[in-house]
Image (cartoon, rainbow, N blue to C red):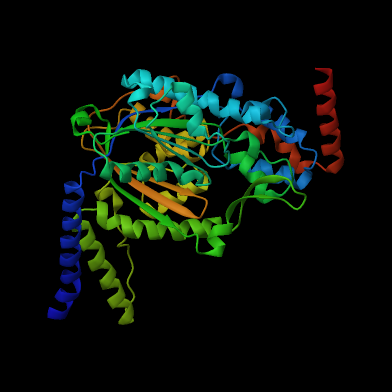
Length: 472
């Protein structure tokens, strides 16, 4: 009995003392990180990718055959994406194979200026008040940098610190938060802006490699601008305070590194590869991240319960005694709301299953995927916006963000709500319609003929589509 007490109690005492000491050190160093405002981007209606337009985009790709059509139809039907997501102008206008630099710049500029104009107006902060500017767009970089483009547009101070992050994938916004948080540790009373998005236009894939055309089905245009500060005098105006952030990187594993990668196909056509090992890499990164995150955000009683249950199950197995039942960590004891990466329906369901989440918990991520699609690094903020628009966020609530990204990475962050929030933000025109009773999209209804077709029918329909286009 004495041995079991030592086995269970001593590790907790050591861990508790360590965490308390670490927390005191962090407070002494002034690690406050507040979100004052955030602004998600909603493109104009002429950029919506409805069922008919998506069909036209697919038909324009002359490299696709019957098997690719079947694969794409299954993928988009099961994706959880609706008809109101947005794409870049050059794709919608049929110029995916003759992209110019100007097309990409227009795509990012529309996002930059819409969100930043609104953010400055809403916060009553001048661009010249900004001390730190971070831009993360993974697959588009220019010279001068995108940060320089913003500095020039808004005539920011000449001592503004700028950071231009690329190649970070979908998890980039929390990486940017971590960067700002670390600067806040050594610079007092600063204002920072994070601009997080992805440039879809130059990365549209026009080939027939299934691992690369899948990205066309999932990624959509979007973005978010976030205003942060570590100034204690602004805490009463802040929306959220960062309590914890954990980053996990599996890049040392070749399997994880190669599962999610920008590359060219065998004919030299560029695109974004999503490999079969992606679910395995995501699971590994997720588990490692939660292992570090749990002790930082969960109450002591839940950690004690979990370790006791785990050791009991291990003891039972060693005794060759069958033991059934759960015993996993209950993250809901330390979290009130979950903002999950909208990487796809399977990603949301997989994370929800592992965390034991309810349909209510998953609703914000599901609805965001349906309405806006996977907007890469900005997707978390649309999920947060949905939760706020539904008036769920109350003072003292705890929010957990979890997102995956190429590398392969899993990043998570916990926030505390500092005041009751109810701004409908980017969801203002549609929040009353969500959640809809039926999330199914009409792709199967319109294109189910593909499963009964042969190559001759596909050829005829493609030629017929081309003829209609020329006539129009």
